[in-house]
Image 1 (tube, rainbow, N blue to C red):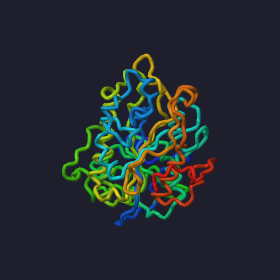
Image 2 (image 1 turned 135 degrees about the horizontal axis):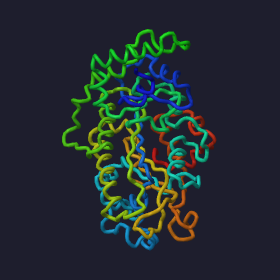
Image 3 (image 1 turned 45 degrees about the vertical axis):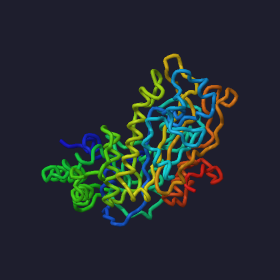
Image 4 (image 1 turned 90 degrees about the horizontal axis):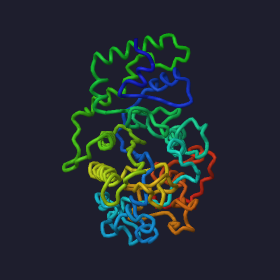
Length: 415
């Protein structure tokens, strides 16, 4: 017997939301009639570096001598760095991003993060995705709240898409969102006639005589996403000439986001994550564990940019991580849970070629709780600026409830 749990958890397509009755969720997600749009809109792509990336070794403050004093084994040598501005340099494994910096489509915000004191991965990720640090009762994510409060976008099942086996907190809420584990597999499996017949019968069995009436009279509307994917044929997609994405889930997710954008599917917000940043042991400096993760990350972002080509003018990529790492290395050649980190903003609308944010310094007296890079830019100010400057969000208050937004505190990445 096919159950709702089967639909939501075992398929390659999941539609989910937090804070709603599950039956209501299932029906509401499939009830609206999506429309295909041929117009080119704006897209925000959020990339989450789960595990707390070491922003100090990702975008290195080599001009601050305290950086080298605190990291005798894992500091990246200045001669190996990709210099940015005479004070900061990119880790050498991020060299693929330097052309984007040079053409001013890549910016960095340093010393950014949450002012909440937690050092728990789970809590910090939850706070960053809900946009309400310190509040555990928030039921929806800030990207979903953006979709709830800004309705100008033409309806399409691909307005908000997360790539992964389940919907992340940042996308959960009352606005419809998709979670797709693999675009190609979804298009191939769900598009088969026998699969569509099985799904149709299951939907009719589950919701026949429902009191809400939210399910359309014909189940064909429920498969609009399938039909749209059949048109673009994900299995046949080829990146732009010369573009090669890194192997693995992260590269695949970026490639499929690019595919949705170039196919004009109405994608407005997209999300993907990449793990492996919790480097307590043997972190490495210019080479090693962290370097390997940064290589995949940098090559993926560079490939995504090249694949989009001129379409990057309509796209902004925002990176984030729940917190940074300690300034001083530990006894195991790694770093422990810290406070502030570095985030990147890439795209045609970005005022790139600069490191934004007030640098607090790494001297003992400048550190947060005597051990960490201090937060000088609240992550909500950065996220709000991107929503306003790129997507044109008119009302930011409902997206970040409980926080008084002030444009004077925006870092300035959107000009």
